[in-house]
Image (tube, rainbow, N blue to C red; front, side, top):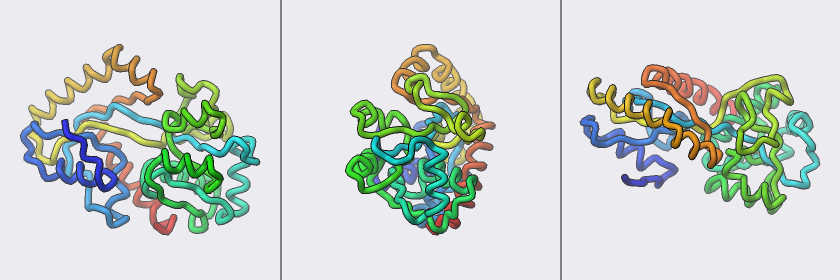
Length: 257
């Protein structure tokens, strides 16, 4: 196993894209659609052979513990009234999973995306540190990433995306509870190979992933660590990847990225 996280993951995905489709080089694909429109890399759905999706971590919206916003509705009203009056840290590059989730929510609530101030960072940890220090007003990222600062009483979470509360964070309400809307947005991960992976090989790998994802031990470990479980077989995963590519690439220009 090789960890190639350099360049925000571009190096690893590039290695995977260029590998021989023989079943010996596989990789984890995640929210990738922003790379091409932002000029970081030219990854397309057709560069990969989808095998199975196994994870989905819903985004959550975090503020400082002393934020004047008691709930999500108040926060959205403030952002709508003065989109450029507050700063949202992207918890990484501003085209990634977390900023795309909050941007979709803001647009759905008629917030002018062209005026929203979103700034990139070196990841969720750096953004949350900026939040705690008072440098930014909002950080969208997963709940596990914010767990330590939440436990320390420095950061407060207004809402989590998805259809239901996370078992590891039962105190955090969902968007549906507060706004009556459901947005299944956030980070996701799935196993893929290079384009052209032979069908029989891909089928064997999909079957193996099915066994892993439905194994009680694997599911218990993922849940205990606060990571979301998701299952899409190769066909459903391929449809999901294309939908993600279309949706993300529609939002990015409206954010002025």
